[in-house]
Length: 173
Image 1 (spheres, helix red, strand yellow):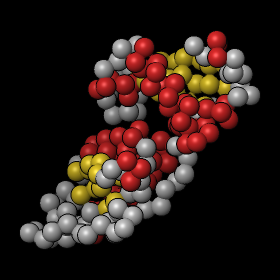
Image 2 (tube, rainbow, N blue to C red):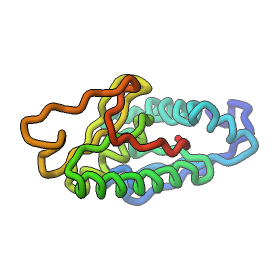
Image 3 (cartoon, rainbow, N blue to C red):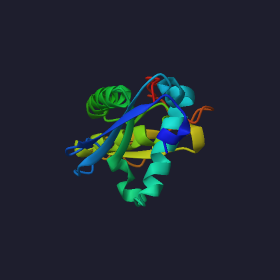
Image 4 (cartoon, rainbow, N blue to C red):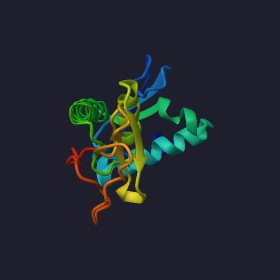
């Protein structure tokens, strides 16, 4: 498919031993290089994400296993995952030290999935909330005092759809 596209792209397929997607399985990593990689990264990596989705469909991967397939340009997604792990660590510290929930800025599904797995691996409850481009991850403390106290109601959402404690986005997706 890539070779027939006419794009100036080369790719290498690697087995990612026990990939960092939170599933504990080996993964397939497809790394692209070449003069047209900027096209893959344009518009928040829409083409790269679409190629990954089409490839997963062609391989007939069920939705529950699609996270084992990862497309990258150079090492940009790998670097993004490292930044997400750092963001998760900051959020974990804030939630545990304050006992209050924490909301991340809106992000793409893959990034939300990485964050949720990372946070849950450390004993915190995290979930994806919101609709469309406003979908984001909310982290709750392990003490059960998610909204600041037992019996209190969740904080009102702002006009942007986010609660207090929202972090700025890191940009690269």
